[in-house]
Length: 403
Ligand code: LLP
Image (tube, rainbow, N blue to C red; front, top):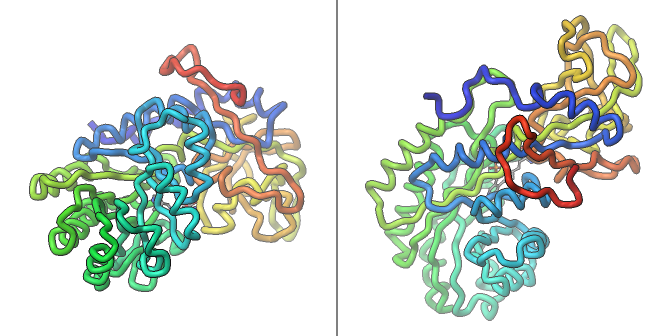
């Protein structure tokens, strides 16, 4: 059996299109998150039998109902700011602190203090805090992020390793770290590395584990946890093969057999939420100019900046006319006053009119969280769509923010 859904299976929004169209009538522009897909992604990751702990990277999507589902499924949370920590703490006061992982970079001293106060696992990504704020770290237990020297990812902005990268500590500084830790009576219980985001090469995480294990074996005898980061990719076009999770597991399993003393942690964001989210927006105007046909929608880069920032591809369909044949090639643009406010270049759509609902797919990760009020246009609201009666997968009671 294939490790993830077969490439031919239709995304969830085909099945729920009528619900989406009626939601869009009153709520668009809006992000909609499908509970069933979120659950399916958790189940997919559970098949990584060599992984001991799963932390969800909430920078990808921090909607309370999404987080609640992960909380109830027993996942931990990887936070990169004190505000992310506070958000999780406030939503789940009973969350055991060992399910909180704090991995900031270039954070002020106070944020580390708050991480320690919450008894989260705190990850250091620089020696500076130890040298500048020794009192804060004396006697603490920490994890340390190393730079494996080579990054990967869907765009250079999201590659987070490599000699000149701002992230992590160079392996050449391991001895210095060892000495500082000794002086401060600080215990290093885990090592961490995250090479980047949107990676489809299945050997990535086992290679990271090996890199960290060698450092641990040479310098840090107290290390039990190896956090091999997130970055698990999803294909951006329907029909393309996804990450081969079975192969990921095969590599991790081989690593673990050779290094049984370590616990393996991962911290994916995108993989869990990308496919579960869509952005719905109504067509405002159409235009022909210079041989180009424009379809304008009510929101743009203020809601979804990924196409403008990374040249990211998001599938776009006319939900109102899903069965009609594509007859035109268009630029799908937003209302923001920048030429870069293009959500899709050269897209094939049916004859599209004012009021039609366009659906922008794969928008559950790094969509709403990266939105802004640019041009004083409020970004799309977020709606959590519980699993429907026809497809019951849930006993979760939606909160007031849900429909
Ligand atoms: N761990 C660390 C330390 C990270 O920096 C990140 C993402 C993750 C985990 C989760 O990575 P994921 O599994 O989601 O790939 N805005 C970009 C992605 C930025 C990722 C930043 N760090 C995008 O829209 O593609």
